[in-house]
Length: 292
Image (tube, rainbow, N blue to C red; front, side):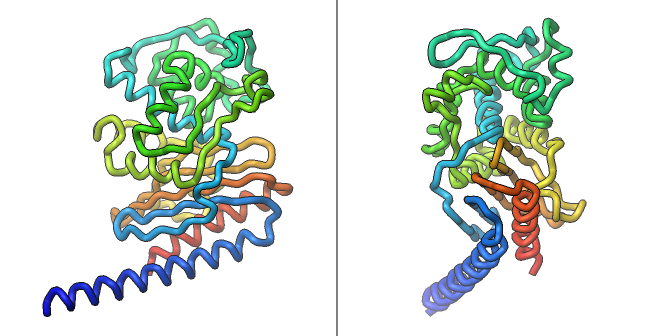
């Protein structure tokens, strides 16, 4: 009889949770519907397991969200003893195309972290380069680090984590690779998986997961996931944007200790401002749904 009561309560809770998720999903779709563009979303409450998915398995241009997988690979190789995060390497602006090894440089005007270019010819620690890659999305730091750890290795690590559709194929502004169709892509589902594992301390090690989260908490671009949240909420996240694309992905920590993962991807945005406002509103709606 006790087992029957437990099963009945469990089923009732599951049905209520499913109904709440469907209601939230419909509200999100209603907010996104007036915005011209395409969207994907993955949300998971790490306490209750509640999820909301929209086009979660569709591949979207990664933009700078691919820098989280690169960071994970850096910490993994450091853990394996290939180098120390405190090791210094040369800051350079000359890279080889993944396609044929031909040289290319990054354009300062296309990078959000122009201060990095003043460091060219100097030494920086691997940790400091990683920090710049994440918090101000430095393309220069990213390419230096991809040269160090290898895009193929980052890709393989994503597979080991269960993220089967993330594609880390090349560095930034590798035009020959772009022209040959080699684009870095992500799905909302896969980014949700790796951020969930980070939140649970399951990436590389608990200590390394916490160190990566600490970097992500210092993110300087906060126009989407954090924008409609109260100051007491903390967000460890990585954004990404190119023409028509605005992405954000991360872990949200509520003031009461609860946490959830949210990934929002977009493409074909004709009005970036309206797109960003809608995505920020969606983040706020999800946060508000957890306050009841």
